[in-house]
Image 1 (cartoon, rainbow over the protein chains, first blue to last red):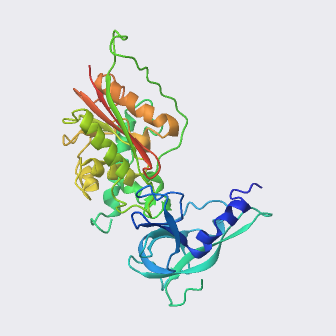
Image 2 (image 1 turned 90 degrees about the vertical axis):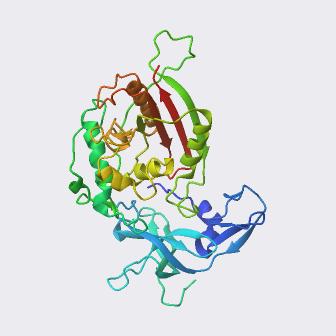
Image 3 (image 1 turned 45 degrees about the vertical axis):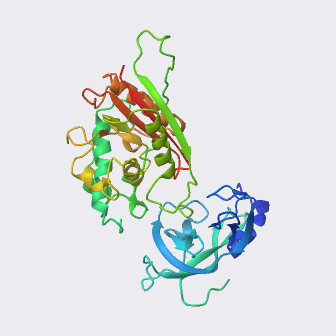
Length: 139
Length: 229
């Protein structure tokens, strides 16, 4: 079984994955996620780390049936484009039921959830997903 | 789709047109026709994209022999200009996900270098139905939100008689997408078109072909103009 996301890489990215840590450009003021060495909008390297809100609005979404190995048990997977104000993020949607079908403009909030498994002996990955808001983001 | 009131069935005319063109192309991977109504009924990949909106991944090889003007006694075509541009290539960081900025920038540069009026045909990177439609809208060949409707009305088809012919090869959708070779295929096909030697749907009297190649969500794009000699 091969591991397609290394433990050390996952560890380095823990603040962006679990706290939605983004970067704000001091030159142009724009925010991007996840943080990069340079601002994708103006190229400046003068950046500061900021934490994004855990609550936002659903801009658009899709229901993915072509799900990669390791997450097939969860197929189909809802994926949404979420507007968090400072920037937008693409994230998995969760807790979708018949009563809470995703809609454009719907309020959503972040929640820590299991996402995929790297084979039988591999890691179990967790990530922030977004669920239809019930007013208590748990991260 | 919601912004421009485009419904699923309207999108289905693109793959149907690509298959129609590919049917005549001996180099096409999927050279058979499909009816538009089959598209929405195919297996869903990521709603509303179905299997028939996606490209077939295949092996393939294409080659171009480039030379300066004097070295070749019987050139097939003239590669007038190639321009490129890069962009963020991300859905979440893009201000406007319905415009492919790298394609827009590269095309602007091409227009600065050569005359792009009276294009007879295009070979564009329709990795998915929506990508092909957004490229046409980004180039200004179709107004924003209107490309799907125009395809459904017979625009860009060899028999429709309206607008330049788009992907006479069948495009990535039906000619196939051998990844690294795809861009070379597109330029080779445009060259054969302007030389009047394309073995499939030949655009009659074609003089100018525009080729749009890009990757992923458009983190980089190349546009080329191929002209008859």
